[in-house]
Image (cartoon, rainbow, N blue to C red):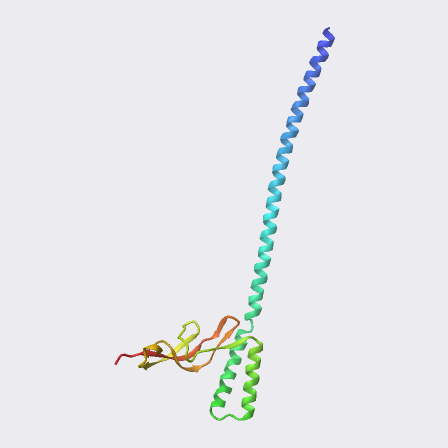
Length: 171
């Protein structure tokens, strides 16, 4: 029986060694799974950050392209102003035709005129050059005269309108 007892003891020792190995392997597996989850989460965050950065870059590029022409268009507005002034002083049909072409070009580039006369003064769109005393309290802070046209490129003011604003004066 001594031999059987020795064999049983050896089996118990082997079983205990296997249990320890199995426990160690399970611990290693847990650690690997934890690492995998951390790496996956980090990768997903990095991917989301990259996608967001790309979208932001596209928006910036679109905005840049949209307003890159602004300085050239501002210079072009000087020509439009000169042509408009020439028309007011009895310009020829040729000047009227050129002015029409200039307005068409501005329209193609989404440059639109800011409506001013008769509208309420808005400092974001208008520049008050002068004040005019009026007797009607209804016309307080209303634009009386447009001295120079204002223009908008897309939704941004390219050049504010220069205007005269009505100021109510009690008698």
